[in-house]
Image (cartoon, rainbow, N blue to C red):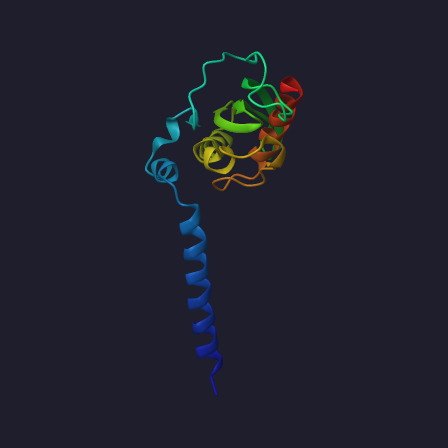
Length: 164
């Protein structure tokens, strides 16, 4: 029969292994960079294909007859309420056949703590949304930032309206 102490040690070891496996799936080069002090980077972006369309204008037509949204690069601001007050982020998405091919998030926060969370979010968002259908994304937490997701999702809804 196992003692209470042995049970606690076994459960602690199992929890540690589970946490390590979960975090290993989340680890990225961008996260490693932000942990080493690149928090001064104002925006992070990734692209599956280069975007040539400026601002909130869409390319003429879409890549497929079944696409809901026009191909192009779109920009929108999203806002959310943090413990420090109202904050904003700037989001740029490139769409091709309703699939997000590039994303850039630019932190617009004024509070240093919010800037830190927004920068972490910006560093990790591309791995969450690039390559996915815009109608299938609903971001809830990225790189430890959960409130920034509200502003991002708001910006995505605006982009969807602009691209329709």
